[in-house]
Length: 353
Ligand code: FNR
Image 1: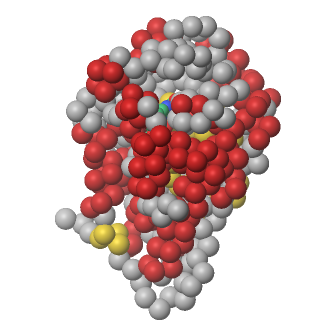
Image 2: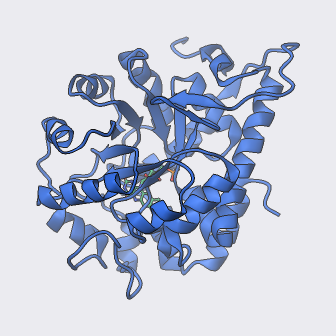
């Protein structure tokens, strides 16, 4: 039985085709940002408080008007079908068996929104890549909304997909027959080329007005790495900010998400929920992110690791381990509730030289 997310990754690597493994694991360029994401968590040290009576910590939290069992969510990741034939249907089932937390479904999901929603007992959010043909994007949003999805997550760091050298070397193609179940058309087998042909490369902040005109759902923007952009997002009407560098897959050389989180959180000043993804691999990483200003974190690659290792049960395993580690870390750090997690928990304290 796996006792850490690293063990799920090992099981997944044994099972997956090496080129698929590289597609999932890889980052852009020299993968410096990819490495920085996990290294930033490794550098954080925690300052526990003792004798606080935190024997049974509560991980529940409230975000965007809903109660989540824990400050965790599934990050949007394309083609869960690369890891398991049931794809996102297995993911939502597996996640819900461990915790009621949102699952963000990619524009490039391997299963239809309707089939995923039929399995879901946990909130679904739709990740939006805005296509050159906005009517395609509008159609996806309408379908997701009709299927009961509860929020939109607009990805803003991808006018095209980043230069991922592993995929270029492998001449990575999706396996025959694998298509994004919610999109019509062709050319999907080569994701980088497809993104250049289809993604709208000229988006600006007015895209939020457009999204608002086609949907009443809350809109989060994913891929923000600076305080000024976070403020612009808030002014443009976003309902939440996701601090993300796309798991190091877009612009190599941008900082680790944990390192820019304090700047973004300070700029937002509690006006909107701030979520973070990139490199979260342990319960104590969740604590570090919340201490430095996040309201919750999203988990990307480890979800596919669980799925590849053991289908829906593997996803349940990944979230069960994270929850166990989070509860354990909260108890040992003297924290009774998520609201007790603050900047004093990390050392050196943020902004202290
Ligand atoms: C992604 N990510 C991503 N993001 C997005 O907005 N839309 C997408 O379709 C995808 N697809 C995708 C595929 C794969 C294989 C990976 C690994 C990642 C990025 C994802 O949402 C998230 O930002 C990172 O994965 C978070 O980092 P970790 O948890 O993987 O370190």
